[in-house]
Image (cartoon, rainbow over all chains, first blue to last red; front, side, top):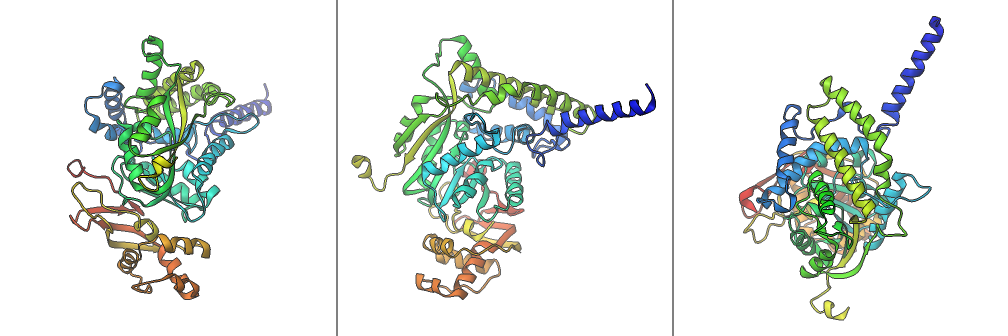
Length: 363
Length: 122
């Protein structure tokens, strides 16, 4: 081959490789880059240790002895995965029903905007995002409703990321983030006009505790919507394969025990909410939420190679490979959960805090 | 952290009866211009705890707000501008929010209040 065709072939290969890794790779073009993967607030040399501690703590998710340690490990989990999530998935750390003809970003946004419509958020309302992550939903919701959104997350790294994104999106006049624990929220009683939580309350050891806090800080008459991670009516606790899948999901997602779909409304009522509406948004005619995971198998392998190379070069912290592999395996369990119909990440419940104690009797 | 948010934060330490409002210790205050929306301000006026808001604005170095306010003041452009400025354009970047009963300091770094409690405060 003469030097010109050699050069052209080389350039084509280099261009192809660049496209495969850097263009096809990241979830967003101007978002997190693979070369910026970190362990959140955990320093690079401690990432692997933290990952090992996390993995052994969640060995038996339903039998965690020290429930009070759960928030610390949820915090650790999000230090480990936030950058990888942002890089490979996007700024909204949750699932959405896939919509034929629409991109993942659009489907995600529509799923988030539906939460707004359910709680009837209006401009000037003060709305609480319980477990706001890096704020993907917060930004969509603030933009769609023009309400003022305050987000709370336990992870300091995420708060910083959320703030950065809010500024970049020009939404920092409508959005604010607070670092705190949703089991003990730093807000006075009866302060918010509305609240929502998107796939976040699953991290609470007792759902009742977080629901009680949300109930407390809502104004009477205000609405709360939650998209819950649950086992469905198809789940059989005596089926070892079902148990394996659910445990795999719990372990890889920092969940101290998935709730059954029937527990949700019961818990809401227990803390004083009136249940307005309840529906599993994953059920047909909705298109599968897990197809995004399935399609991403090539992406996972490519990302695995990228992360391994970066870790070998010392650019990504050692332990990033382990974390990425954990997420890869968890994605498999999630897919199986979706395919078998035993698991749903979007059991929607819409609740209202009664205007007064008689409201309950009136509905 | 804007004063709009400060107006919603309270100390949730175990045993504290009234953790609102948190006292502000301002080390670094930054001003960021934001477009004014009259309707938004009128809605917010009804929701804001005025005394806590005025005290907080003074702690941030802004002294233009009156001690007491009523809705009729919203007709005045000057009042509306000052209200808008204090509510949305003053940011506490570095400092602390102090529990009124225990004196415990919740740090504010890079504009973010860290309200996480220690084990013995829950």
